[in-house]
Length: 58
Image (cartoon, rainbow, N blue to C red; front, side, top):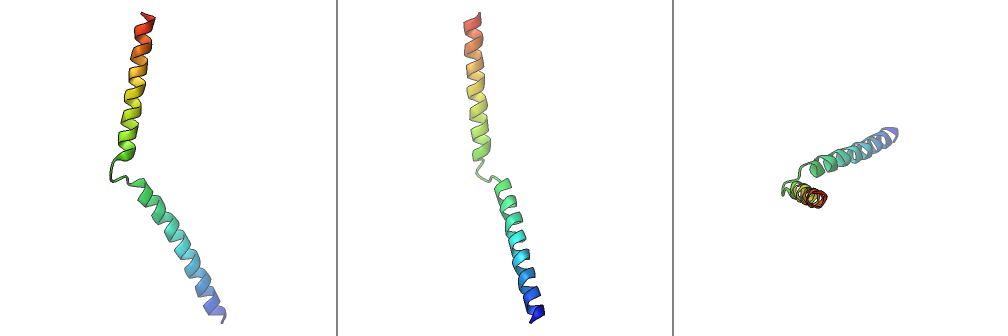
């Protein structure tokens, strides 16, 4: 009985840790490149805004 309880707790903890690590690795890989595209668009918008501000200061 005591061994079964130990195994059950161990399996539950192992499964929880495994799922947490798996979720971190899955979220780290952006297969569609959406984050990269969003970052690129944001940089372009910042460059355009900086160009407008420089134009107004001249």
